Image 1: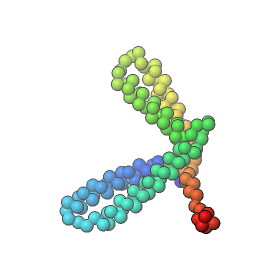
Image 2: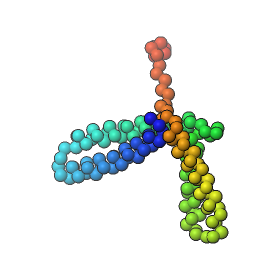
Image 3: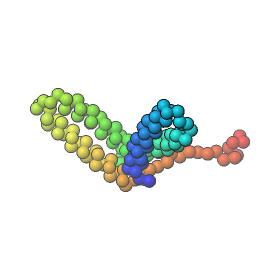
Image 4: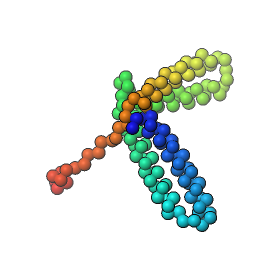
Length: 136
């Protein structure tokens, strides 16, 4: 699975949980049993958790130009916050800086999107002790 596919599935699963939550409230209000929905919520939440763990792991372990992918994402978020602040002022004096930030954001987004659809999702390495290690 590509990183981009995982990101899209995470968004889908988050929306699915919201729908299931609304359905549970409705069914509870109508006195219906919730066991069936609870199983769906748990399985969806578990899949979401697993994808989020793998995505975060991948963000820290995919290195582009000596910088982890997660750093690119953090940098883009920081630029978005800065743009939000500067654009709220609506001053012609800030226009050049705002344009520079938009260009920087586009470039970072281009890098992130390329990586999303080029690299596979990585799974965290889990060390399972062998029998001789367990006995000690």
